[in-house]
Length: 188
Image (cartoon, rainbow, N blue to C red; front, side, top):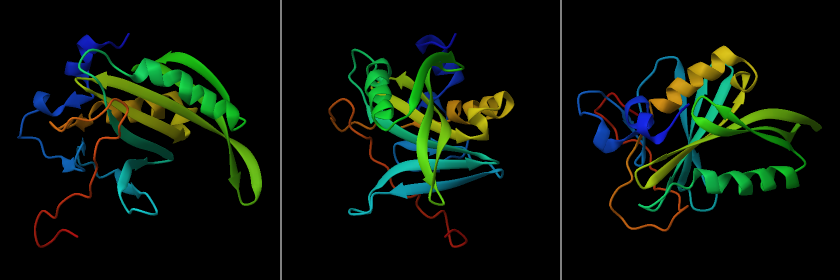
């Protein structure tokens, strides 16, 4: 089973646990390894235009990533499970907590509107506590029902690097995200 002990070797990683040799796309608190098979999208809050999540698009799967501040003394993923379940149930969804490849996860069916029709979308909520942070992923699409694609997406999740920074933040506060800086004249 996944545990804090193997998190530091299997990921997701704290920025202090990775060397400078491997290139990463730097979104501030979240860094992702470049991958030709993956498209990345920054999700912006409409009013403030602030980056609030990073979305990873892979084949027929989508994974949304967010990192949150946590206290030094304890992680916050287990505390987050119940509020997430309650929120999904209030939306008319069904939820089940199971043990997955990175520990406890929520498998859910969430009502969504698609072309004027209401359907249920399979989703998986995963989270891992690191040193003073928690990385949460929401997976939907093929990986929510296909074990092989689920494993591939979990490997991407595990390769993520979190930079907590030194700014004091209350637990559960979203760690700051930003658009990556240009790497040179050929970058957009």
